[in-house]
Image 1 (cartoon, rainbow, N blue to C red):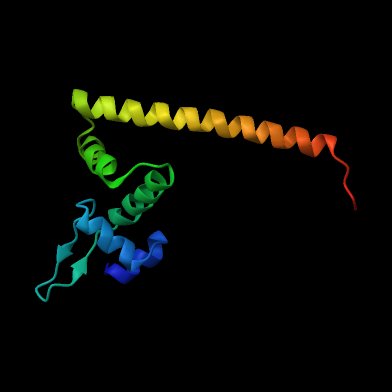
Image 2 (tube, rainbow, N blue to C red; image 1 turned 30 degrees about the vertical axis):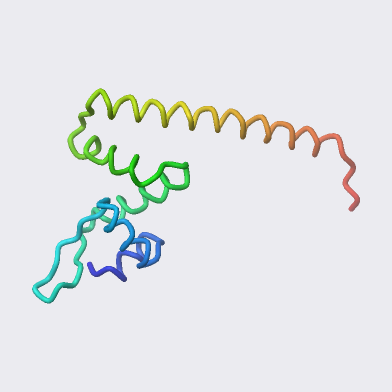
Amino acid sequence: MRIGQLAQRAGVSVRALRYYEEQNLLTPERTPSGQRVYTEDAVELVRLFQRFYAAGLGSRAIAALLPCLDSGRATPEQRRMLQTERDRLATRIEDLTEVLTRLDEILATTDDPT
């Protein structure tokens, strides 16, 4: 599929796809005329990038873990990075859960003006 089709199906901009390519996260094939062509797998890969970015992972971290996705293996350094990111996210989830609980308490103890 072409870059516009991938952008539409993955829910991102063409600019985002070009950025992923610049960061060596996404490598399209090229037609003889130089146009980018992506496989069907690229849709889920781009969606995964979006989730990683939303969770706070940067391009370098994502690039470092891509080989783990492909091979199912990780070096000790990759495992440390993955564990660090996992721990950071777990702490963030705990913090957000506390905020959610507090908001629920406020909602339960305040009057509804309607």
